[in-house]
Every structure is written in C-alpha cells, then in structure tokens.
Length: 242
Ligand SMILES: *Cc1c(COP(=O)(O)O)cnc(C)c1O
Image: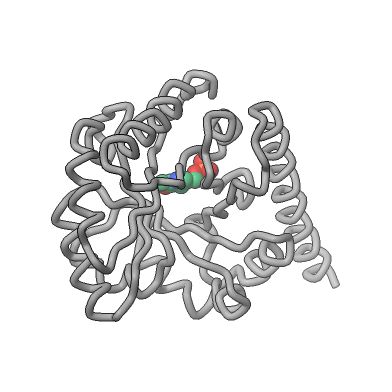
C-alpha cells in the first residue's frame, strides 16, 4: 500500500508539472500574439531512469507526445523499456545532444528529428544511413549563436553553407534551426540569443529560398522567453522530470 501511494504521488506530480509548463507556454505565446498550438513541448528524459516506465506513461497520458534524449546510446537502451508503451502508442523520440558520426546509423533508426546537425561530415553520414534505410530523415541545424567555446553547433556565418549542403541531400529534410542559450540566472539575458536565431533563420530563408519553419530553442530556465521570440519547439527536462 505504501509503495502504491508513493507511485501515485510521483506520477501525479509529473502530470501537474506538464500542465504548469503547458500553461506557461500558452501565456508566453499569448504575450507574443502566437497560437500556443504552434509550439511543441519535447519532454527531455535524459535524467529519467530506463525502468521508470510509470513516469513516462503518466507523461504520455498527460499529453506529451515527444521525448528527447541527448545520447544515442541512452535512447537505444531505453527504447524497449522506458519508451516502449509511448512509442507503441505513437510517441516520437528526438535527439537533442551531440551526435558522433559513427552513431549516425542508430540515430536514423531511433529519432524522428535530429536537432544537433552541425557539420558537413555529419550531414554526409546521415544521408548515407538514411538512404540505406530508405528513410527521409528530418533534421535541424544546430547553431552556436552565443559562440560559447565549449558548446557544439556551427558558427552563425557557417550556417548558410551547411544549410545548402544539407538541403542538397535527397534523404534529409532540413526543418529549421536549434540553439542552446548560455546558462544564466536571469532568463531575460537569453533573449538576444533567441532573437539572433530567429533573425538568422529569416536571413537564411531569404538567401536560399529554403523553408525553415522550426526553431528549437528554450529549456527549463528560459523556455518562456524563447516562446516569446518564436520557438516552435521547447526542450524541457527539469521542469517536468526534475
Ligand atoms: C538537458 C537538455 C535540455 C533540457 O534541459 P532542462 O534544463 O532540464 O530543461 C534541453 N536541451 C538540451 C540540448 C539538453 O541537453
């Protein structure tokens, strides 16, 4: 009995947290005159253990349909346990973290969207693997807008060449851009980073004629600012599963 009560408490908590994030997304969207249904919440499960199936099922029941992992190996390990029910019910997995070229094959098999494509060699590897599987792989180009030396992502001035290269691949579909803002205490300080990603997207669309509808930006600390600045995908971990 005690165990059941504990589990009920934990899972109800996740549903409440999701409701709170969704509400804040809606309020931020309203401030910017945006339709909240144009924003997808990716539940980042990197801290959720593979056997915490009830947590994941509760998140799915609360309406989350996309889950994000930052390592291919972790997603592969959790595929048959943590994610089994949600995937069977139609949920999607996204890769949000750095992708090694030698993991491209597994990545193409596991993820409906890869947020972290940041170099031509990775584009080539993904094209090869997607072609071999007969898949059209959706990708985002990760841009290191804040130019943080420890972060992955191409430099803003490299984005156009990378976009043209990726868009020329028959088995890849570039859907937009992704960035990770610097971790700061005041989320307001991240706003220029999100504005810069949106403006880069606008410039790239203008220069290339390639549609880039998705902007993946915003995490627990700063997703409301990101929504105000045009995020179509927010990647939220701690606020839901923390
Ligand atoms: C961990 C992670 C997130 C989620 O971060 P939280 O602060 O827990 O919301 C989002 N994006 C990337 C790339 C991450 O690695």
